[in-house]
Image (cartoon, rainbow, N blue to C red; front, side, top):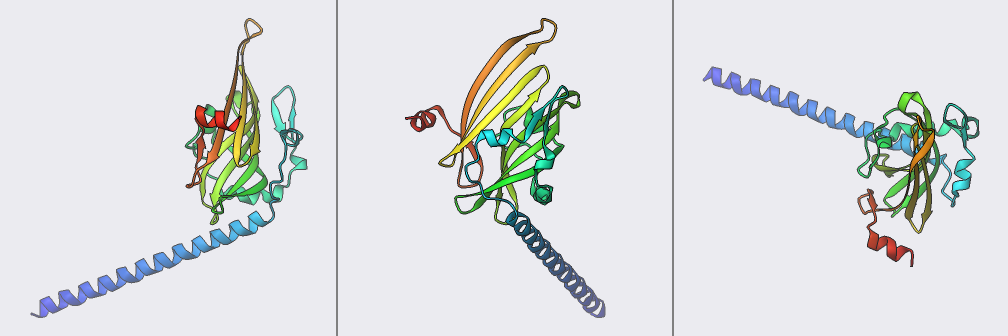
Length: 224
C-alpha cells in the first residue's frame, strides 16, 4: 500500500512539473509572437504607401554595366531593411522559373500596400547573383499578414543577362498585377540571338493572400 501511495505521489509531482513546463513554454511563445508583431509594426510604419509608381520610377534605381545589373543603393533607404527579417526566401507557390530558386537576396523595401484589409503587400528591390555570380536585380512583392508572417511572394520585375536575357516589367491596376516578360536566348558561338519569347501574365491575390494566375478567360474580360 505504501509503495502504491509513493508511486501516486511521484506521478503527481512529474505531472505538475510537465504542466508547469508546458505553461512556461506557451508563455514564452506568446511573448516572442508579440515581440515579433511589435517589431513588424515599427518597421512597417517607416515604409511609404504605394501611390501608383510607374515602371519608369523603378528603372531609375537600376543601372547596367559590363558585369551585369546593380541597384543604386545610395538612393535607397537602408533603414527599412529591418523588414527583410520577415521575408522568407522559400520558393513561392506561384514560382514558375529559376529565379524563385535563388536563396541569397539583399532586400531594399520600397513601398507598402494594403490588400483586402487582411494583408500587406511590400514591394522590394532585390539585388542577387545568378549563374557565374553575375549580378541581377528583382522587384518583388511579398504578401504578409498583419502580424508579419509571410504568405507568398511574386517576382514582378527582373533584369538579368547571361546566355539568356530576362526583362520583366509590371503594372498594378485595380489590384490586378500584370507582368510582361521579354526573354532573349543568345548563341555565343554564332554571336546572335536565336530565340525571342514574349509572355504576358496576370495575377491577383485570393482570400488566403496567395497570388493566383488568371486564366485566359479572365484576362480576356480584363482587356474589354
